[in-house]
Amino acid sequence: MSTPLVSPDDRLPTFAEVKSFNPVAAWDRLTPAQQRQIGILAVELGVVGGVLSYDHSHLTKSEAGEINNMESDLLTNFTQEIEPLWGQLYGWSLDWLRVAA
Image (cartoon, rainbow, N blue to C red; front, side, top):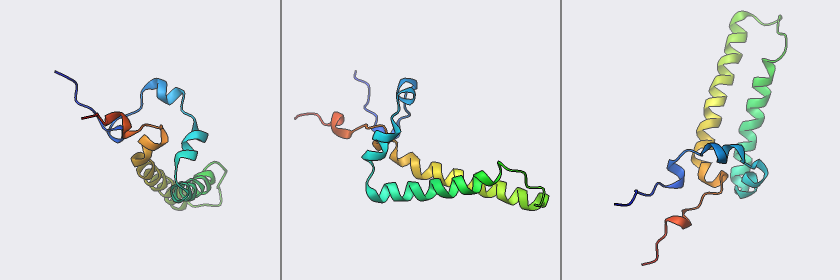
């Protein structure tokens, strides 16, 4: 009995794939629209998240908490946007699933 094939989009990368991940090649595999969307999310996450790296004694505890929540929400959104692209980012292809009849 053969092992069922798993769609590239439905599997996690192996340790070796993570260690050898090439972000430049992954970026080049994205369409311009995907690059734009990921870039926007990354800039937004970097700007909001970067705020927390500095002393903000001028912020109230509530304001600092709100920024922390914003960063958490942005990271969640960024991850949700990236996850469906894993197969494409890792260069996995459905071509290996095609079997000649």
